[in-house]
Image 1 (tube, helix red, strand yellow):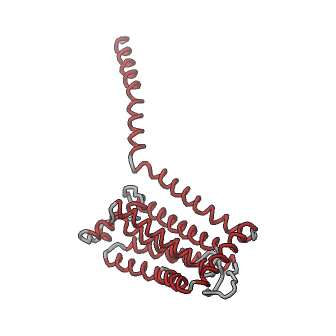
Image 2: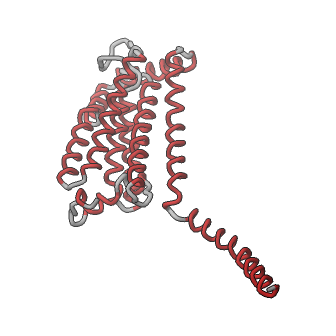
Length: 280
């Protein structure tokens, strides 16, 4: 009997000694597995969104409290750029062209057309994400204008005029939304170099729009900065929400800035046009 007892104890000791190692290996595998990193990814996405919204909130507070240094910065930039614009009519024409081509209306048309195409290609959820992002972002931007009710610059011999309030810049908001949506839609179709080029091009478009609004004398610098930051926050928030949905239905984690918000759908669209809507 003692021999059996001793044997059992020895077996338990061997099993106990081996079990932690297996646990360690299992833990390591779970940590390295992409599915197990969902919580980390979503936490990082939420943290990134928070960091994006912090400067916007700070700008909003400074604008509402008429913070002296910010006002001086806004007024100095507006006066300098306006003086140059008054002396260069051809430059003003170029600025107007840029701000019109990449204004809110064209971006809504582009995103709407992309949504129709995605529905036709049986990617309705991706289309819904695009339409929701630009619609919600645009409406929230308008609501903020009403709430803040900041006056636009009043400059001598204005080269351009715009209606409504100033903060945040609607052009900057919608350009950021439009660029962000289009880039996240086309990411799965691009190579690494093309992705880099696409992001650089998108940044140039957005920054160009922001510059035109100040150079034309219809916005302050803080208006356009807030518009870009707010638009980026909306895109980040809806992309994170879409990624959460993807994980809820059992898909692998994706990196939207490299793969788009729904790489599965775009892969199907770009190859055989598989009826994505019937896959789930």
